[in-house]
Length: 483
Image (cartoon, rainbow, N blue to C red):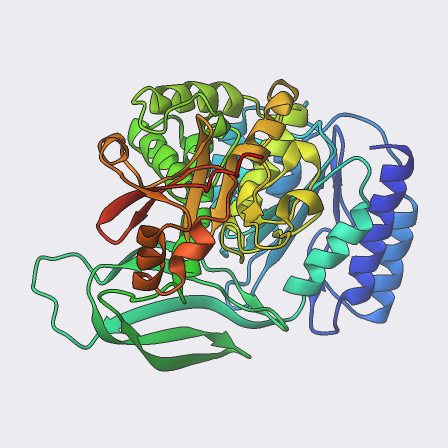
């Protein structure tokens, strides 16, 4: 790391030193070909040691190779107190080039060295990092990977994360759900597939958004437990899991769950290899919720049938090829995209991106306003969701995805053969759809029956194929009068 980036990294270190509290212990580990520590062991953050550490930072210079394994081993070996939260902030701008260089072995050794269950947060600076390795490490250690583009400021990214983790108010968090009804022995628990998969610490001013699926309806008690000021605390509140929703008031919850689930599926494919069942689910969720990814963006092509059985094969081949790229621009963009899905607090089409700016190469379709024109509402027109592009070979598909996919209410519509098709409509339903002319008597009867729901689903200039209750309708626009 040289030049401006090195000076930014130096500034980030100085910022962190100034944030330390008297009760904190810390150390600095710097590495190139060799690994060096500020002090042999953790130091109390008093005025003298912070001053000395600042002088140590001022004396740093760039050069040498990149011993990632040695740096992690040195840092983790210094953490010995399992009774208090421990954090490692790891910053790198390159690939491992000396010492252990196999990413799987580096991750395994780090896991074995982490005796106190420390949280590990990674900062990947620039495109020359092994982003898959960083994601693997952060996943193993209940942390997070932050990707800093070449034109972004390192100090700003580091300070933003530290402000979140620097004041933990609840650590070692666990959530438990108890149904009032008795669940028969031998059946699965009341909930599954909850995200985030691993609960991290809750910091001052932060909210916890936790989503999952439930198997049984009925009254329940939800308990959030954790450690606050060295004391175990719990907070319980009653809730009800309804058997069926009669409107779309809370429909965004399902889409938020689907957004995070897609992120987790990509993470599994990325870190554990291909799994056809996961690819099948990825395609299904992409279609149902309009969550396009670099591996399913072809679904927005007007000539691709949503019911085509070859879609999963194509998604599998694309994901295998692209996720094999551990570094470079494509690897960087894919892991940053995946992370935004996993941490999203907005449902698909809810209007608003997750964290960080989004450029055209890393547009997030599930998170709304990645670009103003694609996410804005004009008159009664529904939101258009931007297409996903994370590599140059997919760039020419972004405009197609942008114009051929729309989120309306809780439904996703794809433009196929000059017709907007509800993603839940099957080929068989399409063939037997009830044809209704816009503004005809049948049209108004249908609109009255569905209490205004219909209006938002037909705000298109072309025919619309939509499922309403248990029937499928094709709404054809009124033909203009001939002069």
